[in-house]
Image 1 (tube, helix red, strand yellow):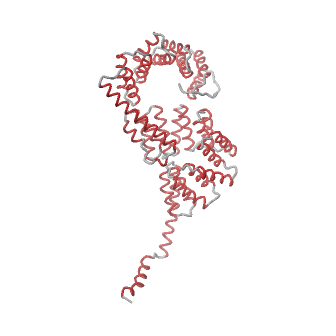
Image 2 (spheres, one colour):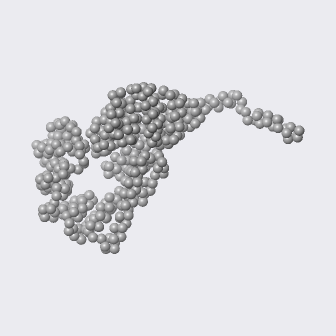
Image 3 (cartoon, rainbow, N blue to C red):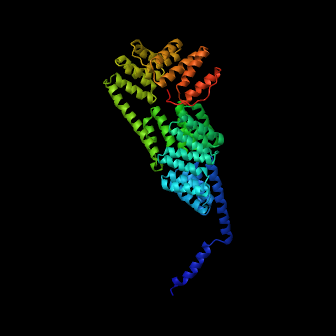
Length: 507
């Protein structure tokens, strides 16, 4: 035997002595790991409650990878990964959670939701039906099946399933939330408000419910209420990127673009792959003239986590702002070369106004007026640009010749009423509104004219005329926000009215 071979047993023995920890050290390491696993799970749960899925994923999935037989670690890791849009990890962890505790309803439900989010309709359906096999009256399983029906385009079946969920558990706030969201998508704003307000009553301290309420109120045009609901969601879950994104959308709709940008950026910092704040931020950047930045924001870092509808929304906005940037560049070149007529000047003015350059828009509109507006439509467009830019007296001067020539339509007359009302000519405003109503206007114009006449009557203390106009406005079936303000005004005038459903497009 060679000296090298003779030494091998001794070397192996020495390595064994060096590598093997003492029994006490092993026990201490195991105890530390067990305590750390539970600490990380608790921290992950706290992050989920605060609305921060990425932080929750970091802790809960650390525990999941080190305690593969721990149901809580697998479940919370799956929930966090689902919120973070890491669908493969969510499914992996939740499948293990279900394997460890087959009758645990929460992990089974989240597994179905993960399948659905990943687009695996068949496995999602099987997961939800498996839950109903465990407990027939488990309302969240009906909600999951309803969302699956929505995904496959069967809204009527979805409504039936939501009704089954509510029948199984009338206190299921999330069933009402999801049904409200379906009503919202179908344009049934009053039904959506009824469902989601009931959900908020059932779960007053739930951030997800408040977010859903804010989204529906935003769609309904009830912006102050939407702002309150979004802020309530953030108070409950301060780290929630979704709540920041909804608050950004409300600010953008209210025209508070600085605040909208701040909230959208906060949402993206917390959840970079969420498309909702990207869309809001791109809108703000586009409306403030930063088109290159808007297009950069719309380039999503990982489109594999998006639904087809989300990808389509991003692509629509990219196409919109790309076309606007190209249009501005081309028309600016023609204007600078002296080749643009009144129509092209107004197209460029409208584009500049949309991108936040009101001063440039006014300059172009004035040049169009000076060049001559041979067609009534050009005068309307010039007046609209000037009015939206705050040059109300100039807008009135452009519209007045249409009225004198007898070619003003009901929209022109209603706009003239708004201008006169804002420039301190109540008698002229009332005359314009009455002329608009006499011209067989579209419903949205009639609503605007009735609202204008009601405001003027309230301002001069004529309560009877104000009530008459408000009641005529409500009879037209105005949008929810307009109807709410009209009812409130009637109550203040001493005539309470029932909150009957109101439908229709915003004027």
